[in-house]
Image 1 (tube, rainbow, N blue to C red):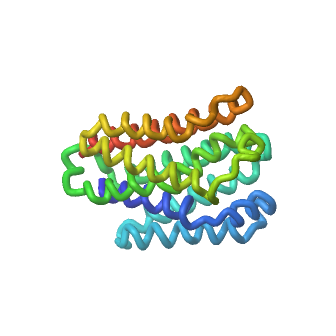
Image 2 (spheres, helix red, strand yellow):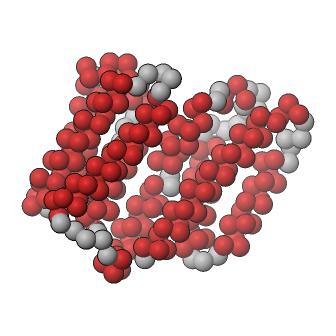
Length: 234
C-alpha cells in the first residue's frame, strides 16, 4: 500500500506542483510538437524513481510513465477550447486508473486495511498535498464554464487571495475531521458565510453570491470526503 501512495504522490507533485501554467499553454498550442510535453513526462519519470527509490520496481514505473505520456498526448490531440474542461477531468481520471491498474498488475497486491497502520504519515502527507494546489486547479477547471472575471469585476481583492483562503479552509476542515471535531467545521462555514456573504445583498450580486456559494460547497465537500476517506483507511 505504501508503494501505491507513493505513486499517487508522484503524480500529484508532477501534474500540479511542477507544471507551470506557461507549460500547459504551450502544450495546448503546439500539442505533440511542444518540448514542454516531453519535459513534463521526463519529470514524472524522475519523480517516480526518486519517490519510490527502488529500482526493482522499474517495470511498474516505466509503465506508469509511458501511460502518462500516452494519456497526455491523447488529451492534447483531441481537446479543443470547448472540451478543455471535460478533458481535464478525463485526463486525471485516466492517470489515477492507470496507476491503480499498473500497481495491481506488477505487484500482485491485495488491498488490506490492516496494512495501512504503518503508512499513516505518508497517507496524511498525500491527503494534505491533494487539498492544496491540486484541488485549486480542479476547482478552476470546474468553474471554467463561467466568466468569473466578469462577475468579480469591480470587486478588487488581494492577488491569489481566494486561492489561499480555499487552501487554508480545506486544510482546516481536514484537520477538524480527522481529529473528530465536526462542530468546528460548522463554525468555519458559519464564519465564512458572515464574512463573504454579508455584503452581497443587492440583486446585482446574485451571480457572484452563487459563484461563492458553489465554490465554498465544493471546496468544503472535497475536504470532508478526503477527511472521511483518511479516517476510514487509518
